[in-house]
Image (cartoon, rainbow, N blue to C red):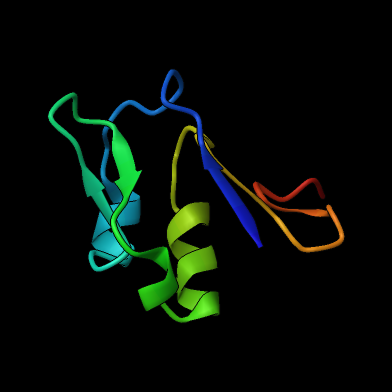
Length: 72
């Protein structure tokens, strides 16, 4: 799984942090960053990424299919 946070798009709502605080935090610029995403169970990590209201977090599976935000 590949996860990318678009720092220009993130506005610091912190929904990812609320869903998985052990995996994400807001940095000094109030932008989401990874702390330890490997410490979060996969489904919960996907929910945390999907919680972003501005779709600043994109997730792809190992085959390159986009999982978050959903394309459907």
